[in-house]
Image 1 (cartoon, helix red, strand yellow):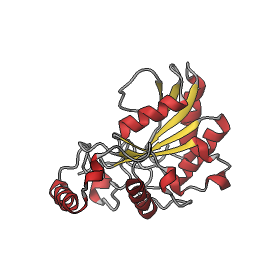
Image 2 (cartoon, helix red, strand yellow):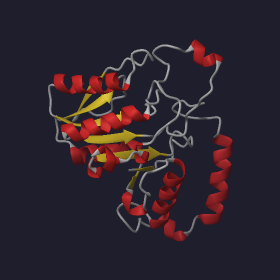
Image 3 (tube, one colour):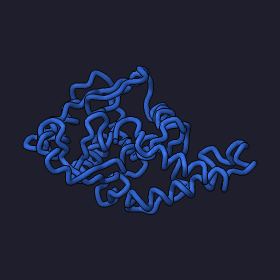
Image 4 (cartoon, helix red, strand yellow):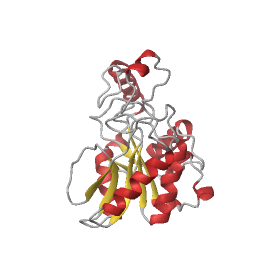
Length: 241
């Protein structure tokens, strides 16, 4: 139900898409977008969505958003802007790899609850950065994690944001699975204890964190989202940053 492609919601999504396309698709939508970041109506819709579901500390405005043809394309563009060839990004292992011009530095975290304290998570990133053989330019933070599905507690997010400020690196939060979160799994949770047991069950967006209180510059924090996972539309290429 929350795998790479959610087929269960396809009938409902298809019905909604057909209805709204018939009502709202006009000739002007066949032209180039009126701005580099996306059409004003799209940016307004995305900002309203983020404000409704991500509990941002600061209201998200259309001018805060840039859209692209899928999360991979937006991430590729962002990394091109913040990294030079050969630079590295800290990523919690395991991870999916697509390109090689930027090095992915694996961060090994023990997600078993007894070992997975906030301090331990942050120290895992510090250790990976110290041992890296390249210039570290940022953290690529996937929450909920893909492929494990772990959800990071707010304290760990705050700590990693502060570490990014301390280390003068960027913090890129991939929140593509933000709304595909379950709690109260009962017996299933008991059977799945161990490496696959999430340290938290309530998703917390980086947008909801008080960066000013944490002493973190807003310009180093980036959030990615796409309709691919939560809306089961991986074939419709739309993402925002």
